[in-house]
Image 1 (cartoon, rainbow, N blue to C red):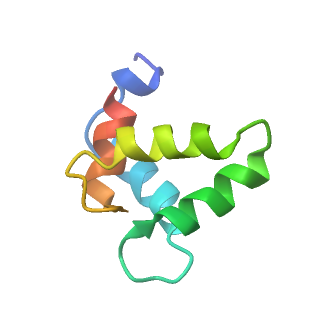
Image 2 (cartoon, helix red, strand yellow):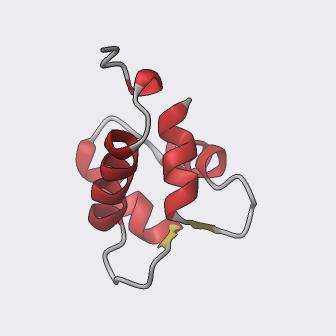
Image 3 (spheres, helix red, strand yellow):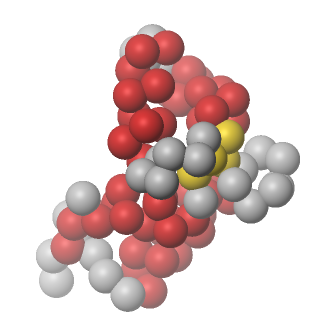
Length: 78
C-alpha cells in the first residue's frame, strides 16, 4: 500500500482531511478563514505572512476566502 499522501484514497484520505479540518476550524463554522489558517501555520514556525498567503491561496481553489473540507481533501491529493 502506498503511504504517501498522494497515494491515499477513500476512507484514509477523507479521515485525514476531517482531522486536519477540525484542527484548523477553530470557531466550528465549517470553514477555515485566513485568520484561523494563519494562527495554526504561525505556530508551526518558519512561515511568514507571504508564505501563509500563498499556501492559503493554493488551497482555497474557488477563491472565496475560506477553505472547506473538500478543498483540504483536494490539497492532500496533490
